[in-house]
Length: 450
Ligand code: UD1
Image (cartoon, rainbow, N blue to C red; front, side, top):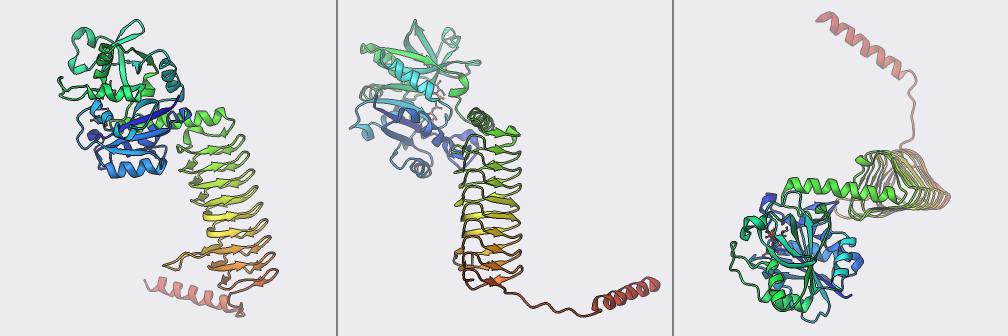
């Protein structure tokens, strides 16, 4: 079935106590809005319309960042959920298929639930997603007659008997797009809140001879985020689901509760992740790699058999080939490290390429920044970079070359050569002993005087 998502994201989110629009608060490193956009990816929606309002420019940027084809429409006044859906009508005027209304602050709707909704659409004109609420609070109530949904009554407008219903409205709606827009255009605002309720479409539809039903999901899935406390709980839920999925896929997590994952983290089977590892956005770790404790990764690719850390930092653009070793207190940024190369201790490798089989000694720094521009360091294959070498970029070390430790390398080192750039050592016979004696005597004299 051809599907369009309409994602409502115009609300301010006052309870977040934040200048950031509510839907841009992140879980797993991505805005809530992106989670909503990602949900139901399995349905491969042909169109995606985001209804923005508060902070519309920021919301638009975030939506387009995730999906450049997303269409943004602005609801400048928030007059209710039906009014919000109506704003998407012009954007979908040329669209034939089903529309599913989702919410920018509701990140956990699953593919399975959306598949159940589309399945129910085969037999009904409108499908609503409901849930059995443990504490129905102020949710809209679904009034059912067998499998038929007869109406949705908002809490504010409900009598005691209706408030006793525990089957609640999640807000998610699926219907043929043209039908949906026709129905929302007929919604009025004569109700307790003076808003255009999306929920009113059910009664209007039934008056027009259309059918409606509800499918249900777990309450946790439909949970919207309204406050910082709910955001924290949502982050915890996201993390535990993401870790669970990795474990299910055959990844070894030595201390799952201490692993932080992002919405797009990819980790291959039989990779081992030691305790206290952070995976920021854009991390791919291939099968069999090992990430040792206290490492921080973002925007990087770690290939099979590579060993990272403990205490390593991989920043965006770090591309590590098979069997690479990056050890403790090493930072790698925008650098390609070829197969089997090693950077084992206390180094900074930025804007660089390191050829296969090279060994970068302890304390080596690529001096990539001159205060204005960034420059490239190129290290060939099987190079031995001596400890504490400063590589002042732009600079190249040819294949099979070597640098003497402590060198400040400012010129290219040709293949097979040794680059030495440090002062020649001069030993002063007996100097140290004489100096110590002098200092010790001075100390003793001072102690006597005091
Ligand atoms: C809505 C439902 C209610 C359901 C509940 C589930 C209606 C009338 N009521 O109530 O039955 O139980 O969700 O959470 O639909 N929004 C806009 N523009 C608007 C109004 C809302 O974009 O003009 C967005 C908000 O940003 C929010 C979402 O729609 O993300 C829900 O709106 P809200 O006003 O919070 O609806 P509820 O009162 O929760």
